[in-house]
Length: 431
Ligand code: GDP
Ligand code: IMO
Ligand code: MG
Image (cartoon, rainbow, N blue to C red; front, side, top):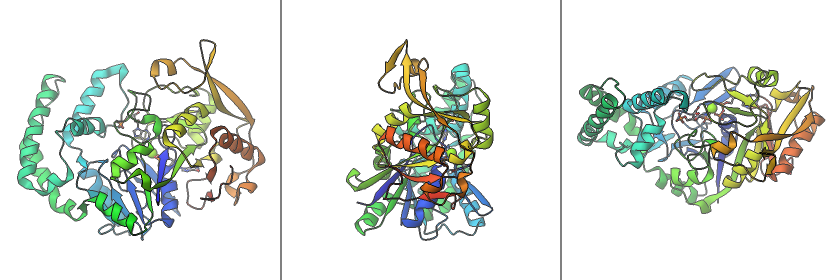
């Protein structure tokens, strides 16, 4: 067994990119299993900061092969742009980046439909990233999608695109009153992608299983967060895929029996971008401090992230769904200087305490969080080189989180850069 799954345990932006980049130094393959260019995974070292949307966050470790799995929806324009950026930083991708022939494509009409649908929802809009994710997965499940492999056969692509665009134009003009798309122009644009994409396309499930058979170690990189899961998140304010652990197997074509670790990435507080319930949200000076100090602005859309206290009710729920074996706590440094730090340890509804996280939004919108308060700390945790060096108030907070969740902490991140990390994978620092 040698697959480790990296999962966002909250509403995304927990720092998955940083942790995947860090852990990829010890693996052979990093594989993205769901989502698309809605993700924004930030990696920082030295004076360089890069935000990746589709290419796995292992690409800056030269010995690592990166895989974009069948569960991902790929925007060819976005992925080619990203490859250009990576090359400009001195990293070769050909031979190191593989894309599943079964992955579905995001087309311009997916973004158009999403935009029209969000506009029509008005106040009930989901607040999506506008990357065409929902409509692309809709086509996949309606069995009308176009896959990467279709790009490689001009006749098949032409036929499928024609059928699809005719249908989408009917929807855009009759339901949303939006402008129709130019069928021929889009066909001309997309047939040109075949040569550019061809070197990367392969049967990635076969590749991964062969690699595992040969004893190689694989890191499966989730995008978004568990509370945005299409089934287990705060529906309908979710994304259209499965960021949770099961998604790694179906999104890569690897058996669950190969998985030995599931690492939950937990931001030391909570954030959410887009709409939907958020019980521990802070609309006060503390929320503003977290946003300002933590630079909580979307890596993909630049939108300000909503900020709040850590929600252990939600975390115990996502830990249950994912089966976390380890926790990586990120952004601890951001809370330095706050006089009091809080964590939600329960919910009350109509005066009664709930014993579990309700993922239906009508209930979740009404719950009142019950908080445990902790002393803050003023000493800079970025100076720490081991768990014992962290401010004692911070250690108390982390120990409480680990005990409440009954999951050991193996990584504590105290800054955006690689070396701002305390790591003891395999031997818990807080158990
Ligand atoms: P992801 O989507 O989960 O990969 O997370 P994002 O990259 O969208 O957002 C995390 C942000 O926090 C990025 O700007 C990171 O550079 C930054 N970051 C990650 N870990 C830490 C940390 O421990 N401390 C601080 N201050 N920033 C961090
Ligand atoms: P990473 O991988 C945070 C949110 C959107 C919106 C909802 C649906 O960087 O953690 P979508 O475009 O997916 O249909 O939008 O999900 N969302 C994210 N929030 N981080 C992300 O990715 C997100 N990807 C989507 O803001 O609320
Ligand atoms: Mg992000």
